[in-house]
Length: 127
Image (tube, rainbow, N blue to C red):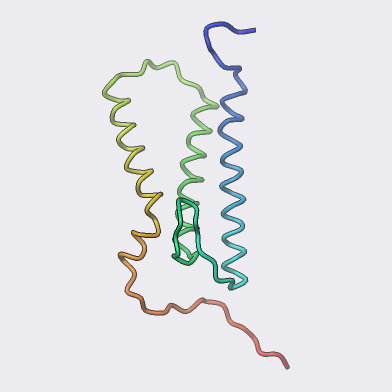
């Protein structure tokens, strides 16, 4: 048993993979909902009435890319000492990023002109 509060080496990797897998599954569900044309709202970060759209897929894609970087960093490990200024800069960046993710719907409606967009899907009529 390890002493001093250090986690088992595989714990950090598993802690990174599980949320990433959930995000990938949610993204697949959003893509499926978009492909079927089902009208649904995304309540990922609270009660939102904004319909699921491409911005949710983009948001989740960005989160998955960031998660991949986090997993790569966890696998690589680091021996560099942390400095207070670097920690503060990283914390501020994380706060800004978290706020952008949380308010994705509000930001999307801010820049949306309300004009209907073609879905890109061509529906064939029955013969």
